[in-house]
Amino acid sequence: MKGYAGKFLRVDMTTGEVRADVLSEDVARRFVGGYGFVGHTLYNEVPEGADALSPENVLCLWTGPVAGTTIPVSSKYIMGARSPATGFIGFGIASGGVGSELKAAGWDGMVIKGKAPTLKYLYIQNGNVELRDAIPYAGKTTWETEELIREELCDDEVRVSSCGPAGELMTCLANVTNDRNRQVGRSGMGAVMGSKNLKAIAVRGTGSVEVANLDELVEFSRDLYKRCRGPATEKYRLYGTPANVLVHNRLGCLPTNNFQKGTFDHAEMVSGERMLETLVKKVVACPSCPIGCDHINVVKDGPWAGTVSSVDYESLELLGPNCGVDDLNAITKAVELCDTLGIDTISAGVTISWAMEAYEKGLITSEDVDGLDLRFGNAEAMVEATRRMCLREGNLGALIADGAARAAEKVGQGSEKFAMVNKKLEWGAYSLRSLQTATLGFATSVRGACYLRSGSYQPDVKGTVDRYHLDRSRGKYVFDGENLYAIIDSLIICKFTRGIYKDNDEIAKILRLVTGFDITAEEMIKTGERIHNQAKLFNVKFGVGRGDDYPPDRAFEEKMYDDVNDGAIIIRDEYDEALSGYYEERRWNEEGIPTRELLEDLGLDTKLGV
Image (cartoon, rainbow, N blue to C red; front, top):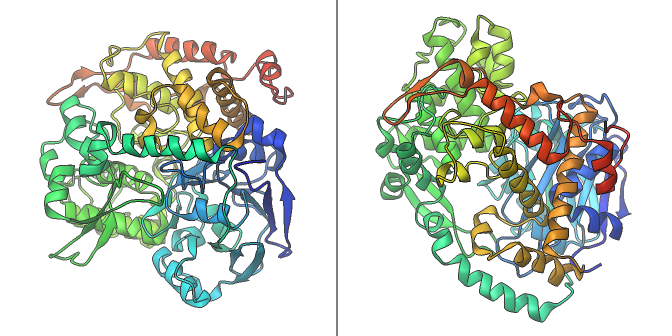
């Protein structure tokens, strides 16, 4: 096969056995790569009832067919497993050089089972693969682990993905870091690594990727690189994703004080513009990327002087305005703690904001928070809460380390109503009540509370629909977005480039030029539908139902008032109608379960269909 190595690794952590397996052309054609391979692997290989942190859970890492090719912004990889955070399908996509390096080593991915008796790391050097002792790296941060493994191997070019102390502690929200500033952020893949006693994966490859039509691919790639330097990506080049802070504040969809409001009085203080002016030291691009969205902050003075971190919109917003914090230095420090100690910044910010609200309402005491003055706007308390969360330290760390949903279950007293989660995963940095199509897309996401599955915020933000109300037609926006994004995340290409493609046929053209598969745009979107339904079937296997596709209670029970929104709220009957419309588009029943007819049409296993 062109574009694929045609083989992947099977790793048994319990026995230490590592062997090669064949990637079939049938699987490649039907599931493309990346996200598609994750859904296919987990559905077929995670036993029914397997606990997410047990040896029986499967951790897989996959590239897409474009990794290592000339296509811009294509050096990505995905990790997937049953999520310890949600109990459903978990996965995250990371940029950096790991994806292309693994492909250069001659592998499409890996499937990891079992649990090692002691801490190990997996070292891949082209065709030589071994599990090595990682006990010296126990408790080390992700940045330390990356550098120490390179020192051990005497190779500065080795790419390293590792979990931090939070992963070793099997904290449900633990992430995985590579290239210092890139993360497999959401749904707890670092905890699954920790549960397997797998500290890191180190990769070094010196091979190349064979494609079906090199000359035409290079010519097309040159054109795409030029487009990547055009207006479609300008804001990412200038300010990175924090460019969205002021835009969202003007729209009234900037979550503030645990999603109680949609505007922040001090938005200017934490804007992408202010960050560029005061903290950004340099701008970094991933391999094969002509955009360069990664803005690296360096704190120059004050209690966090010397702090270094890559700060994106989601991290900035949820550790900043959503916690009432307007101090960029503090936000930069909190992001550094999350990235090095190993917790998802989105989940951290939403969980800490829940704790702040619970504290202000008297539902948790000073003793519960170890004496911190955990009120909205207290930057020092936010930073310390982040550190304790990552390390499960003290009463506060023990309470919030596994996220807002589990913390609210412990506290009770109605605190569940303002735990901003779906499927127990914390909500992304978009207000619910002022972006209601987005809310439908987030809540129906197979991963839980996810803004990356469908782009459902776009019709709201662009004014295509009435963003303060829902109707049955909104399901079509989510449906179409999910099918396309399933392809984007299976190839895997960066979503920041989606605006450079003239139409879906240009994306299908990538597949044709790289793999040689004769596929039309319509067939490609049908493949995306298959991929999404395969992921959904994994969730059905673990008990998902209609009740899992709703936003948190705050969306229905509290009107939102701020500088833009005058009593915004989601009407439950409208949401019910929109959700049924989405299920209808998907050809699922009223409980959100795929029909057997649909599964037969897509060539998927029908035993869980209705």
